Length: 391
Image 1 (cartoon, helix red, strand yellow):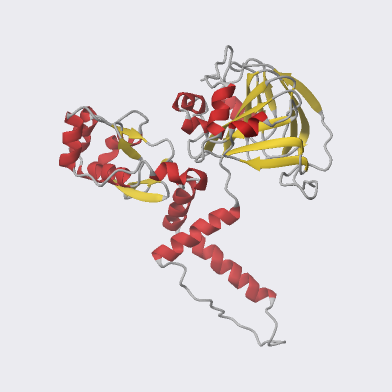
Image 2 (spheres, one colour):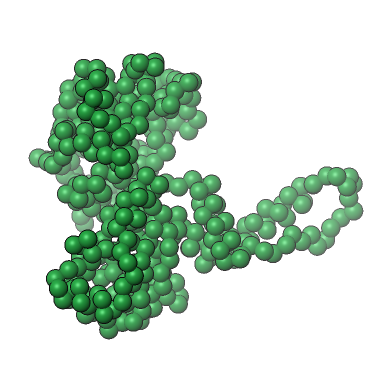
């Protein structure tokens, strides 16, 4: 069994005992951790227009807990107070390829559940206030020290301070407090209140997870129904009773409507699968431009061979998500919300198409023996999930 970082737990023991159940602190989970990214480089990312970044200033010009969105400039950073502010940059694992290996350390959790690596920097006193998250998060200390205060029970109905752009808890009473040093890591399940404060110049890596709401899932399901022209069965009421009040929508009618919706979902596994695949691979709006920038022109098998003979290869687009499901008839790949079919007879091609390593001439020769695999590769290129390395 694989160990859960530098702990006495196995990965499965962590999932069984702690995942979405209770917090866990692991001292020196990652001994000798090298953040690779400097504070200056992080600030440089926050100056890029296409990269999502935020500044939280505890006492800003417009009042307490001021939230500002990037991109920022050198003048913005020069004007910051000496303490009590935090810079946060999203999706750093995609913008800095060298940091993608951090996310791979969490591959015991499905890739479609893993969201991004957010990196924050704060001088002494820097914080984003006491808050909760609706998703799981691992907080890995990268540089400096941060004091984390947490609650022992999840907070399902939180009350927030009015008039702020941030959701900061009105009341927060810590049950436990820890000072984290570089290499220490804290896991928090959803809805556990926490408050982190920098004790000195401090960099924290936050690994967050995708947890769509029921509304988001229903929206994806509705989009799929619309495309497939499904959900067209009309309301029926056999066994109707004489109406006591002809304006009343009675409980029996409401139950029939509810059952009609449940039947639509239960009898349409294919549509549910498509909706989930769409939802869990859709590109974030903040990354859409970067994802689209890597889309190559349509290619043919001949063009692929010619470029690879010249030494080029197809690399995975870090801004586009991919996942797959297996049905009785075929494999279905999802990339950037689009679905791609792959024949069951081409099962050996599945790991080749979805691998993180480049697809080169050696791999192409294996795929060319499988027409379904070649068609899938061309579609992956068309949606931008693969692009030429030299481009």
